[in-house]
Image 1 (cartoon, rainbow, N blue to C red):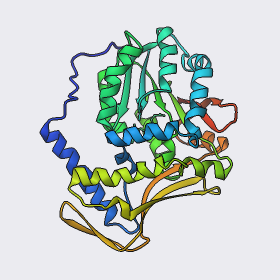
Image 2: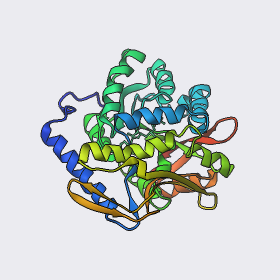
Image 3: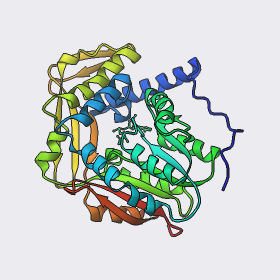
Length: 337
Ligand SMILES: C[S@@+](CC[C@H](N)C(=O)[O-])C[C@H]1O[C@@H](n2cnc3c(N)ncnc32)[C@H](O)[C@@H]1O
């Protein structure tokens, strides 16, 4: 087991050069999406400071059942989850993809920390705001825990964590974030994850399960309108950061769920013919033209197990909430791929 290496410096301060690079990538991605037909925006850009706040409101809303379901699993079954991931006496590097505010994972972190089973905690998030928050809040909540927040994309930051420390890994990917990949892209993501892990490393992944279509649709079109504000906030972010002139009042949020495929999709619809300029590039919208914003895929348990095996993992255990709305699965990296 290797100790945390102090030789690898992590630059978490955004230098002007790094900021410019980030903004250029954001601009290119936005222009590529809005110059395509049909138009789309990448949902990873939802999370600026306001986006983070709106997502907290969505999670607390009555219609968004996912958070309560997964919270129930992580509070009531944290001891069983810890037992299932602690297969030997090695300490773990716990790496959390898209950690958000860690309100759910903190229960498992505390449980593992009490068992003195954590070497390092690496929360990874594309939102700088979130990483700053975690670096500040987690040491207060779990004194003594060695935390190294990594601001960036999942796999770039996993590679960084790998450079820093080579303990046995437990990757957390909670909140049904894995549902945000299109059905065909999800196994490719899991294979990539497997390829960056060693035999015996573990993953704990949260999947939202197929259920009453009305229940699912309500979660993505909540009666308080937070999902709508969350989607529109990306246009506001583009206005602020990329010198654009979207009129948010000219777009409406629309969500739909297809129970056959399990795909829940959200769109912004242009309410009129209009031209928007983004950093001097004109983008034309027809009346009723859509921008595809996000997919949230729902799975059956058998689909999840099949994907695990297909991607080089052994499905070890399923943890359900009482209503069986949601499942957190433990996968182990196997030698056979
Ligand atoms: C839906 S929230 C879920 C947060 C948390 N996992 C939970 O269950 O409450 C998704 C989080 O993933 C982050 N995220 C989205 N795409 C990402 C990417 N490509 N790389 C790293 N973080 C990402 C967002 O910034 C956000 O904090």
